[in-house]
Length: 302
Image 1 (tube, rainbow, N blue to C red):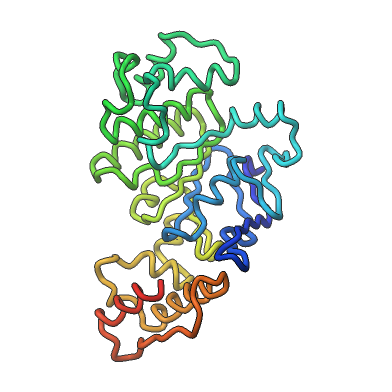
Image 2 (image 1 turned 30 degrees about the vertical axis):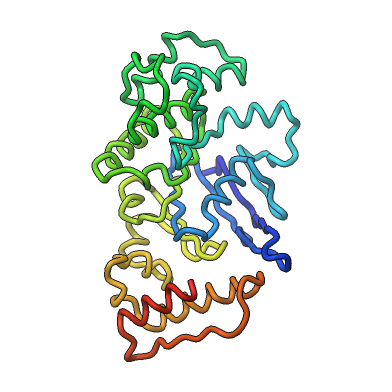
C-alpha cells in the first residue's frame, strides 16, 4: 500500500553545550499507510516528539525528506503547504497549554475554519463538541473550566475539525488517569474508524499502544531500533531495548546486568559527545549487582 506520510533518512541536530551537536533524530525512515495507526514508543528524551514535529512540518530536518501523499513538504509553496497542513493535524500532550486561556471554547474550535477559510456556524462547532463526547453547551465556556480529560477531548475536537487524513498524537493520554485514558483511546479508535484516519501515536507506554496500534516502531537515542506488527513485536521483542521497555519499571531486577550496563554506557556516551560531562563512566554493575546498585548507577549516569 502506498504510504500517506513518510520519512526518508531524516536527521535533525541541535547545538548542545557550546560544542558538538546533539542528534535528536538520527537517520530515521518510516511510513504510515492510509487508515493505519503506527505507535512510536521510547523513553523520554529519545527524540519521539522531535520526530513528530518534523512530520508535522513545524521544524525542518537537516537532512532527508518528509513526504505527504508523495510530495516533499520542504518543496511545497506556501499555499500548497497550508492546504497540506489542513490534512495533517496534531493532538498535543499538554492540553492545558494548547489553548489560549482568553478564548472561549467556541472561538478556539472555530480558529481552524477561519485560518483555512472554511464555512462554519455555531451549530457546526457544537456538533463537533458532541462528536468527541462533550456538551454543545460548552461553547461559551473557557478551557480552564474543564477537567484534564475534557480538555483532551477538546484538543482532539480541534484536530479533527477540518476532517484531516492524518493525526499525530503526542503522548495524548500520559497525563490522564487510567480510566480516562481508556475513554480517550476508545474515542480515538472510533474516530479513526468513522473518518478513515491514519495516525501516529507517540507514547512511552507499551500497554497503551497495544490497545490502539497496528504497528510499533521503537525509538532509542534518535534512531529506530525495532519495528513490526504490534502483537508480533510485543510477543517476541528482538532488541534488548524493546525488552527493557516491556519490563515493569517497578522491577529493575528483572533487567539483565548486561542490558543495564549497555543502556547506561550508551546514555553516558551521548552526554559525553555533546560536552555535558567528561571522563569515563564508573559502572559497578557486575554479576553481584543489587537492585540498589542499578538504581544508583541509573540515576548518576542516565
